[in-house]
Image (cartoon, rainbow, N blue to C red):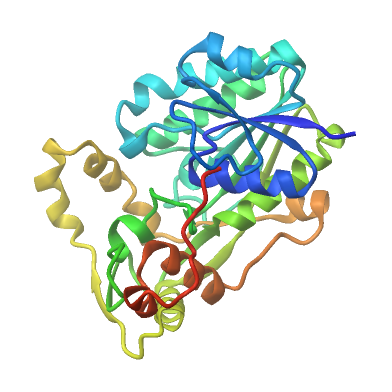
Length: 326
């Protein structure tokens, strides 16, 4: 029988890709959004806000699972709204006996002291965002009667991602790729998570969620590469023979930070670009088999196409990679 999930954040990267993957897996997918997209993509949309508990409870009626993939854009009001939104998702999950799934991040750890993180590695967040992430997981683990699933991953990128290092700083959306700004030491490894692969991994976990423990945590390894490897793949994906590169001027960011919330959050992320932090996915592969993996060049080519950064995009002769509403 078809199972039903409510996706909170289906217009975003993780939520949208997971919703599409679950549809492929035969799930009935419901979604809650402040603005319902014109193209529904096979999803049953409900209009409402994740901060409105009644709206969440109404949309969640009869579901088997809830994906809590909603976040405030640009980190605005992060500390004020993230936990109340999660509380509404928890209430809806408990009311329906549903599994609550949460996309996690590497920010729960301090990369200066952890080089390889297992799901049960002690969390020592050294950022405000990381502390909130750790608190979100703690609430899931300690809520009586709640079944929860956390899938932690590295830095997201993908065709439907509007908030990523790639789309908000490394390259310029809407312009053919010619240069790139790399945030870290190019000799240091970094974990990247291609959103369609993350969505597929979530779908496979939810397919077998009945066999998971009440509080299940897994790691998505994604693509591990240093800056040299990432920039080489980016150049190949963009069809650029010689990609001009520059480094992010971290020392200048504090000058802008007092006037920009996003910039203040970015400054806290610098250690993740100076120290390697790799996620061990052994438990994930034990649960679902081989981790979904799109080759990096292919993933970057699709992403650059969606961003309008391929030369053929400017001529209007390429395939349409733009993300569909979901």
